[in-house]
Image (tube, rainbow, N blue to C red):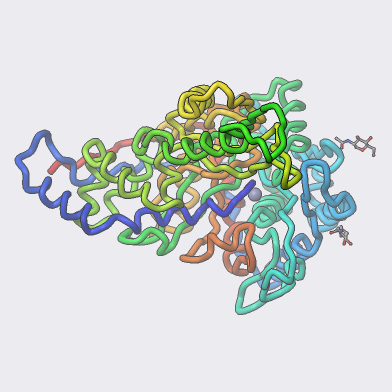
Length: 522
Ligand SMILES: *[C@@H]1O[C@H](CO)[C@@H](O)[C@H](O)[C@H]1NC(C)=O
Ligand SMILES: *[C@@H]1O[C@H](CO)[C@@H](O)[C@H](O)[C@H]1NC(C)=O
Ligand SMILES: *[C@@H]1O[C@H](CO)[C@@H](O)[C@H](O)[C@H]1NC(C)=O
Ligand SMILES: [Zn+2]
């Protein structure tokens, strides 16, 4: 995932529902009913009988365990670092290509699989299905990583893949080499066991996701568009299984990202006649720009909590909370403004409430006795699902409210469309079933990604993009993302291989079984 820090840890947002909120809720609870309160929206619906498609089973034996871990460790040891949009480690990317061919010989020699290099270092695999009427899907992952230095305080060197207490340490163990290797390892085992898919699928591996994916993912998309490919769904990295991270929730939650926030980088500048500091004008370019920036900080973007997909997260998880949180979550129509006010108090949870505004660069002046003519500031905004890029730009303009401040959009894009997550949603239900078959105690819910992924480039090829891998996150683990001591347990990596092994087979169903859902009223 690109540009983390603000990522999964944001899901601890439920932690900070304060006692004052609970008090308000209890008062409301005792009020006569303005309308029927729902106690338990059981959106965790049950689908009827699924067509049996997982005909090939995988029980990982000792030999396979050694083999899949050795392959994974080798992948971690290759420093496929993206330093900037123009600078990656091409030697490492070539080495990675060689590793894939060595580790997965059946994938590269099977007559069912067509492989091609895209933009020299990215990979696109097409696995042919026996029924061409079934719309194919795409599994997406990326092979590049963000930089890491041992001197930052790693317990093991970041490209060592060293084992400590059952965990493999190294940059990329979570983001994103476990899906890269897990997907291909599962395909290798499927093909060895003679599996031939009914529904064809693609595997895309980008090589510059961490710097925007403008070479890898964008080239893969261009190629697929030329070939008129349409996809049933795309599954990429993003969210995970949160275990003990959401306080008050009974059991772990698998959040499947159904959208991503948008983004904008805006340059503000003020240009004035230069002058000598002995005869300063009443206002300088620095003063004018500083005032504009201050206004932006003092007037945050509107509170929109409950108007985006975060609503669905609450509704899906509601039945797993105890009272009174269960009551709050189930009656979002009433409590979302209140929740919004509580959540905006902390910077990590504020990200769910609104479009965030961050002033990241402020530049002016070169000499102590010269009044500079030019002052520049860059503002980075992450756009809430219920707003558009244009609305955000208009708001900045009116908040700045000073014609002397010039505004320029450096780059930006709208929030990603919200993918379906209902009972008719093929991709969502397949992922959900695969999770529940493996981990019955987990609650599956839609979620929203604060960061961005390569999958955003695929929105013209499909309506449904899901961002998820079954990586277990416990409290504190989110900081490892792009941080120090990134790691995955050996057991969890093995689970990833099994997960993709099952997911691919689950996609072979012709159509989803008929749903029947239930809502209990209080
Ligand atoms: C799995 O096996 C069953 C029973 O032999 C068969 O009817 C079905 O078509 C198979 N499914 C796939 C996806 O091969
Ligand atoms: C690039 O990758 C090569 C091959 O893996 C490695 O030897 C080299 O140290 C890396 N360069 C940088 C600058 O990280
Ligand atoms: C791929 O490599 C060739 C030859 O080294 C180079 O000319 C070309 O620009 C590269 N393409 C990309 C997309 O990096
Ligand atoms: Zn990533």
